Image 1 (spheres, rainbow, N blue to C red):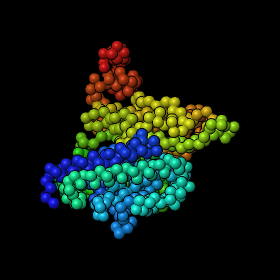
Image 2: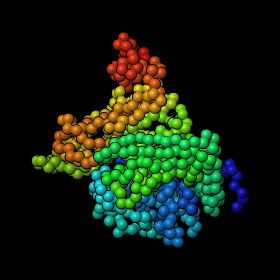
Image 3: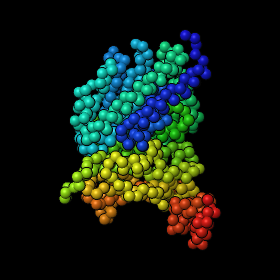
Image 4: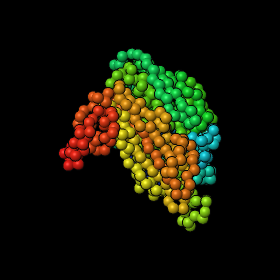
Length: 568
């Protein structure tokens, strides 16, 4: 074969990114779970024959794709190269060799060109139910959290394992939905494989060795250039968050050196009794993501661009929980990792990182059933409904925070209509929460109000997965804190931020999701931006008086001009 030019390799690299994005979109279109279809809680990637990630889809979450980068080598080791054949499909939801908890299913497909193994495709999706206690923090060990599928063959040379499918169906609450998601994962890998082989035929490539070295060499060099342009130094970051029964302390020591950045999580709280613990693979995923966002955001994500970021944590700390620790809500802690790293980075690279945001997703799952206090209507039914929601992100050094936007996970807020059509749920209210963004030269992003209940004839358990109840997002560089999370029944009965809680027939759950912290002193906020906040209802007159020193006459004039359309 003639020598391939750099231009041709760049074309192939772009093609690979398109291939994995098509792979991800195929999963979105065919998945059964709303968490995949509507929220985009998934990842997709292509790997060389050594299991090194070459490209990832833009659609998806850092927690999935960066963890999945470590997962494929586990598949190669467990299955064995000599036991891999065309038509094979492999599967797992192992929290320590997959993406951190049992509710994520990872499917890996070897890609053969003829009889030669040339690479792998992998994808991950969050599933609504995996059995056990259900999605929540209440378990005392991973054994209670659901069905564990070790790394194994889902299909052997094109033949689906019927015994495995029967075992899965017998152990989950939504068998059709889960098996449908598994087939969607399998199919999206197949689409990626077909596109890859088409590209290899087009460019007459016998293997991926050349393009892999081109991608990895250039990515590593570009990342090291960014790291080595920074001033060497060490700083610490810390953050306290709610935890389950008691607060959790996250502490990191960040060291910038030649050719690497080290994150050491020594000093962080130990393993918790409940399911908020984080396997190291997930801590690494969000640590690397935070560093890439701040230092090398435009360099494509692959094995080489991730390698210079090293992450260590003491065993049996909450960010390096060992088996059999409960880990179902590992995201509640894991999504706080970037803000903790940013606390350290702000001391080393001032003016580069945002204020703290909501951090973890404002998720809850409703287990609905016919009411039991009296006869239920004939059409009452059981259902599991999971919703993904977001608080506000932290203000940035030059911009306001984003309202109701998930950072760092990047998943989308699920539409009310999509949520209500999968079960007997009514979402009575879902709107932005005024005054929830921290005051500052740049305002924190707003959280949301949300009010939920069940249709007539139903009661439900709600699994709350919330944080920032007692520890709101902190501002940076003089900015104010965001508003905290609140949760209660509509009759005023207080509820916990985490855990399964019963809601009787006719009752509703009232939630207010947190806002992001502000950046910079509020006194430096531009007049035009304060006027716009008031006109849009992002802040109330009382907030404007208290934090920005606006007079009653100013406020009255702004609101009058807003009503006439002058401000917009």
